[in-house]
Image (tube, rainbow, N blue to C red):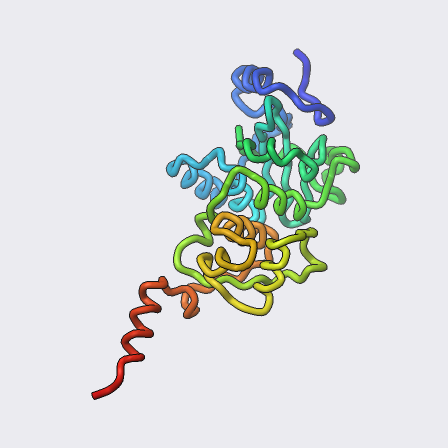
Length: 249
């Protein structure tokens, strides 16, 4: 039986056939029974219950929250793209650079499976499980591209609901983002705003605002404030203004 190689991408049909035969992901090739941490598994089960287990951004967000490495097999066009993420090291391993994937194809990307990683990051003492050095790449550009160009147009569950947001990443510390989204990211460094407010800024929309906030969150550069005045619904703010604006008798 031909083995899956980390230097190639495989057809979805071949991957599914191999997975059925092995009862696990064909890319892991683990020499021992290795499982994901229970905290990450709990989040993945919540996603499954909400029928979001194939959502690339939500699965990546769970890995980033728990700073846990994982092997994600992504559907990219009719191919399976094995991506091992290492949140603590800020790296991912993939036979191809997913940060350079075609935007129209990223919009259809989906998670086929999420398993314990079969590889280790560079410098790990278990050097026999370290992959090809040239296949390790910076994680932040991948997360940024998937947030801005991927299939999810709405806020991640973790940062949704009434909230005000503030960006913590400077222009030099985030991937290059020209145009309105880049300007909005810079503006968020000096002022806090709700999703609705950001969507009204020049060149922005509700979807663009959500994508920007998702990107900042995944990159570790977003402050979410639930008690900030801007977090209140507009109807509540309007009623308070009207109430306090009435003349006293």
